[in-house]
Image (cartoon, rainbow, N blue to C red; front, side):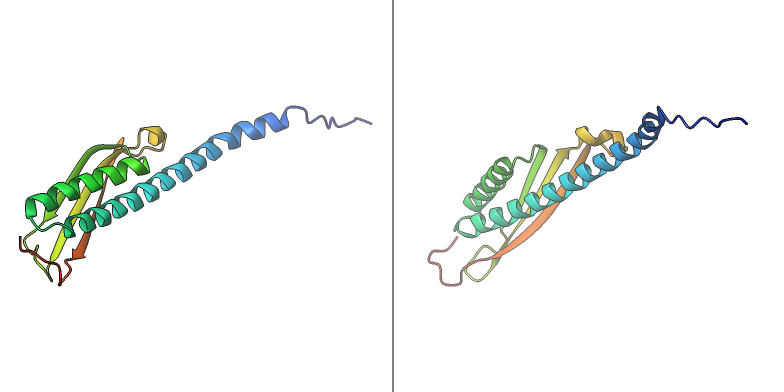
Length: 140
């Protein structure tokens, strides 16, 4: 009678070696999705805050300056490292009852998840429109 050897030493190491790359890929994918969602939300909030800051000013030049400062400060406070930050402010209707529109575009680095094959940088863009108070005093 022959005995069948049932020694399974080392089988766990082989299984881990097979599964580890897939788990690493999955973890990087989750990190990438989280970074994208967080950066997108932060750019949306920055555009909204910038539009609000611009709507409180009466002169277009002041509105543009305040919007740019508000967007940069908001993204810096949120920890979004923008390689290139562009804030465009539309003040054509900057008058009581009008609107001001702000578009924030942030090019963020994705260098820590490039193993997934994603580009090293990704651009996030958001636009917000704020209504100017009808009863505010002064004219632009």
